[in-house]
Length: 153
Image 1 (cartoon, one colour):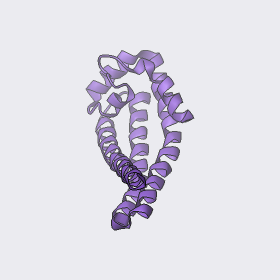
Image 2 (tube, rainbow, N blue to C red):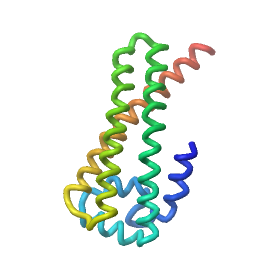
Image 3 (cartoon, rainbow, N blue to C red):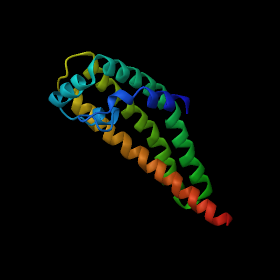
């Protein structure tokens, strides 16, 4: 929670017309020309905040990966019918964490050097894969919690 709050607190100046979703817009910028424009729109202070935010994100990976994986395992334990799929989904959270690290390295390369290919594409694909796997895990946990709650009622 503290890491998440720190990331939120350091991302305020990253939201503008070119980056309507702040750092998430940067994750999906897609090409070096758009990345350069976004970085210019942030200015020096925004670049520093983005770098700090990415540093915190490396720590956040250590929190969200096990949390979502454990959540998937909790659902697997409660609903044996999907145990193999849910265990696989729990393991895939580690893969999502690796994609998050790859994304962060690509974004740091964009921040610390002149934006160039292939870094925006690497960040884009890594973010897409990370969010896809993470979303599946969160949906599985939410569905499991709803079903568990319905069984109690």
